[in-house]
Amino acid sequence: MQKFILGRKNHITIVSAILIIIAFVSKLGFENEQIAIWALVIASILGVSPIAIQAYQALKVKVVSIDVLVTIAVIGAFIVRNYEESAIVTFLFLFGAYLEQRTLNKTRSAIKELTQMAPESALKQVENGEFEEVEIDEVDVGDILLVKTGAKIPVDGTVLTGEGHINEASITGEAVPVSKKKDSGVYAGTILENGTIQITADRVGEDTTFGKIIELVEEAQDSKSEAERFIDRFSKYYTPAVLVLSFIVWIFSRDIELAITILVLGCPGALVIGVPVSNVAGIGNGARHGVLLKGSEVISDFSRLDTMVFDKTGTLTIGNPKVADKEIYADNVYEVLGYLASVEKESDHPLAKAVVEYIGDIKLYTVEKTDVVKGGGIVAHVEGHKVAVGNVALMEQENILLSEKARADIARFEKNGNSLVLTSVDGELKALMGIRDQIRPGVKDDLKKLKKLGVKNLVVLSGDNQGTVDLVARELGLTEAHGHMLPEDKATYIKELQEKGQIVAFVGDGVNDSPSLALAQIGIAMGNGTDVAIETSDVVLMNSDFSRLPYALGLTKATANNMLQNIIIAVGVVLVLLASVFFSEWMNMSIGMLVHEASILVVILNGMRLLRYKLRK
Image 1 (cartoon, one colour):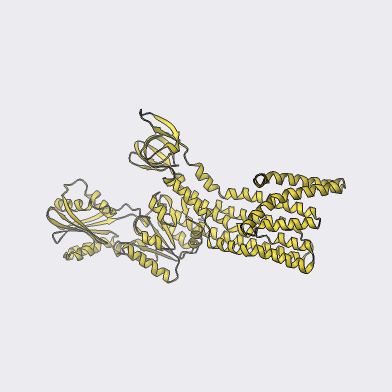
Image 2 (cartoon, helix red, strand yellow):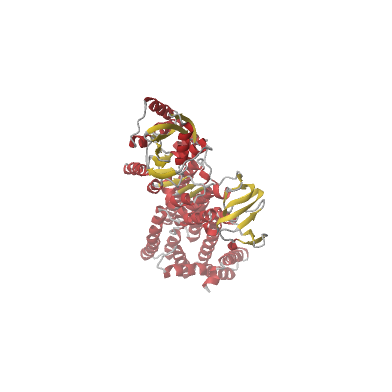
């Protein structure tokens, strides 16, 4: 019976409205008091039924909810035969709940849009080599799938054959098509705008990047900030307090209408819903624009930060370093370069890749043994020779003598903003390479936006030499620059900032510097749809789009302000209503309920403004 009634709340609301109209027409138009009373009584009983059931369910778990207050108020109105008030109050409460649900659903529109992007079927290769359409649940890792123009990519995978352009807006927030060819990675939920490709499935279902994004956004929207938890605790005591206040007023005044009016006016509906609706709308907006905010607490901390610390490579720079200068201190140039390329092929460091790419096709030698020196480079044995490849610190550690010319070259390279790779063979310096990474386009303007948004300190930390880091800092207008830093040094630096009372965000690539991402109040990963970026940070900027950083900060500040506005509106309305009971003659249950429901709609609509948020230029 309870399910039946609760499942037909909207129908009950409509019938209540019709009965109230009949009552007023009978009373005012035909002066038939009897029909009016019966219509109002039936409307009251119908209207209070779902409210009373919800009140009973709340009391079963020892919670004095708003439904309890309204139910008692309606029963009180019945006792004093004020059927007009009881009918109107129940109708307004039900109609308000309906409007709240409709508008709240709109605040969750972002997650709804995301789930609608999820692919439902795929063209899977079967035993005879043909492709047949199957449900997405029937696709396993390793299956070969065909994707045609206009179709959604069904899984995370790798292109086997074909070429095309894919709209990755569901992952990155950017609708600009991205070119894909053999061996390119593709993501579930993205759309092949032109071309035809065959892909092999690497991750399926909830394990895809798209699946994880949906899961994270859902969890984030359901999470509670400290402000919400406080309001929940406050409501536990506030609602019973209103009940007690109403009882005390009745004891001293013997005015039951005044007492039940206080019950209605004291309902904290807008206060309870004001903060969650802001969080849901803010997180939803971010998800649509390539910014994953992993929870309500993240919004609170991010909106208050005063210091932003950046990793250099791949964050402020594009992460694709190239050899810009070189000096060879040997006659057997090709042999030295062969040793260097052979050793660097053992490493996956970006600088090593740049060296190998620059040297190109050359005779390689057998690398017999390698020792990785943390923060320094590699010491290897090649064809019986001891070869050290790394920075100046490694050369000093290996007791390599640097000539005056070499020192002058090093100073010149550093002044030009180069990262250094030195090579020694059997204790003698043989080669010096200067490697430069380009600064991301538009980063300087984005950093200016961060300053306008209130970030006081912009700091770059890097394992690179100090000269290179200083050059980047000067070019971008950063507050501080620190070079020669290992991952643990960066974490220590962040801890020192926090001990000074600063609220710190660390921006990195989500793969390296995981200690710093975890230690900072806000860890921000320049993710390119990678698992590590999504898992290790508080905020993920999809597609490594730096311009999303000021957008994310502006959004969290707007969300935090929106929460505060809603709290002020909610508390202000309750105070005004309660004051009007004692200092005015016009306040009654119906007007109180009307204002109460209106205040709830106001805070919801105010929260919904965040769905349209755009960063001001």
